[in-house]
Image (tube, rainbow, N blue to C red; front, side, top):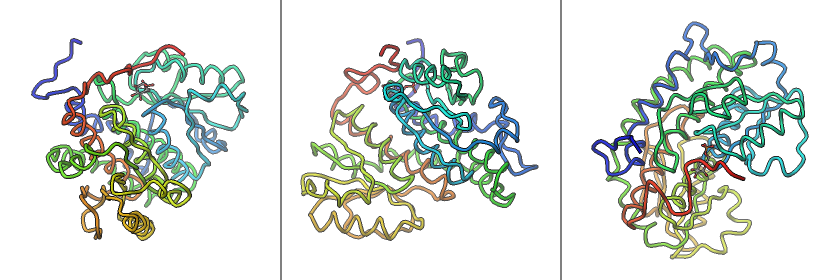
Length: 366
Ligand code: G6P
């Protein structure tokens, strides 16, 4: 590749470090402080059309799907529109019902993923409308959608997604804010989110420089064969992306599970050999997350946590605290240490970090 790693050992490390700048570009010119909303010019939806949306369906593969899962959560929370993400790779196989009042959103870094393109074609063939949330300008999927949001995150060279996941989540926050302000979200709520969005680049900058601090967590994961990543609500989307990142670059088996579901099965696998990484934001689900950690501790499972400053965690082996944002945007910051963690575990194990075995940056075949 003609791209330069600069001072970094790997493109993955470089792209993690670039996130403050990537997010700044995703936000650029899109914050409307006059009306306390976001403005995404390329979505081409009139206020009337935004009001008429009854459902949102988000389609993507891999990290794009997981970013879409967080996106669905943001849209449902802020715009109060039922929203759901689904792997684009499965969509066309179940003869999906396409609805006129559903907004379909395709998510892709490369804009070339075959499964995502095929899902869009299925929607369009049945008369549905699709917006793109895309990084690569002028890509096949961007052109097929014809309208949407460009991330402007810059080129991502490492096979695994880091800055694109973060920029996609930010783009969904902007879309959710814009849809929300046309519907039920107040100006005061809009102002609260605008302030939090503006603060994100500096907050991310304060996390990406702390690579050394994931050492205690990576030492425990590196010697395990299996790990659980758990989170509740939007924290589960973070857990899914964190587990995927670890699998992709370290080849260790990590399984994401909704924290509340642990007791319905996987608790049988918890032992001193199986660490659990918990996403523990300081929000209204904190007590629930702490009681899940206690259940794991009772089964002698080692617990690692990504949390907020000031949260008291008992019996946890190692933790990494990130700065607090607004609750809706916390998942964006909580995910960053998981990127550092996957990178460090993979590096310790001597993996081919920028080109993991069996994987391709964009899968352009079925
Ligand atoms: C491949 C990569 C994944 C990526 C997925 C979607 O499977 O290995 O890391 O998340 O494609 O790529 P896209 O370009 O559509 O976002």
